[in-house]
Amino acid sequence: MGGHSHWATTKRHKQAQDAKRGKIFTRLIRELAIAARQGGDPDGNPRLRLALARAKDANMPGDTLKKAIQRGTGELPGVHYEEFTLEGYGPGGTALMLEITSDNRNRTVAEIRNLLTKHGGNMAEAGAVAWQFHKKGLIVVEHGKVDEDRLLSLALDAGAEDVKVDEKTFEVITAPPDFEPVKKALTDAKVESSLAEVTFVPQNYVKLEEKHAEQMLKLMEILDDHDDVQKVHANFDIPEAIMEKVVAAG
Image (cartoon, rainbow, N blue to C red; front, side, top):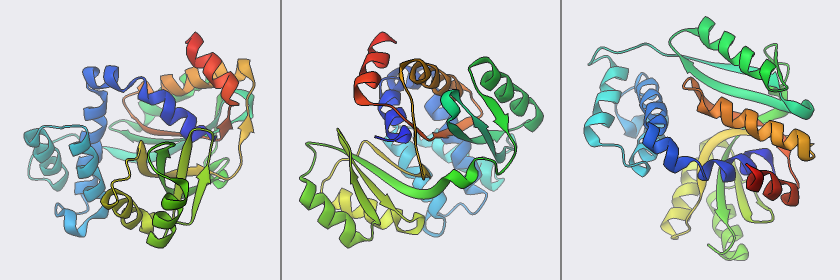
C-alpha cells in the first residue's frame, strides 16, 4: 500500500476532530474561492465543480459555499490567496510535495521549513522531488464494497488507466481528464469510495521501518494541520503490521 493510501486511512480517524475545528471548511472555502477565479459557473469550470462536490460531501452550509464563490469571482471582498508548491524530504529519505494556499508566501515558507527541520526532514529546491510524482485521478474503494471483477470492468470501461489491489483497498488510477467520468460511472453503479481526488501519485516508494514510520506519520499529521497546507503528498510505504502498530501506539 502506498503512502497516499496510508495517509488517507490515517486521516479518516482525524476527520471528526478536524470538522469540529473547522479545518475542513477552511480548506474548502479557500479551494472554492481559488477555483471560482476561473469562472463562477461550475458547468464550464471542472475545478469548481469538483470543489462544490467536496463541499457538499462535507455538509457545508449553502450560504458559506455561496460567499466563498463570490469572493473568488470578486463579487464580495476577500483575502487574496496565492497557490504554490513546496518540495522537501522527510524521515528515511521520503519525498514530499505540499500544495499550499497562502496570503503570505514568506511566512508560510518559513513555517514549513521550520516544521520539516524539527521533524527529521528538510526543504528542497523546486523540481528536486516533483519528478518523482505524476498527477493522476485516484479513487480508493475498500474491499467489501464491490467485487474486484465488477470494479475492474466498471473502471476500465469508463476510461481508468489501472486498478491496483492492495491489502485493504482497490485503487483506481485515471488520467486527470478522465477522473470525473470514471468517478461518475462508479457513483452511478452505487460503488462507494473512501477517497476520490486528483492528486500526485508517486512513481516509486520508500519503505519505512518502525522508527521512520512513526516520525513520518507524525510529520504528515503536523503538516496536514497547518492551515496553509491544502494537500500533502509523499512516497512512503509502510508494511501493514508496522502501520497498525504505529497507529495503535499513537
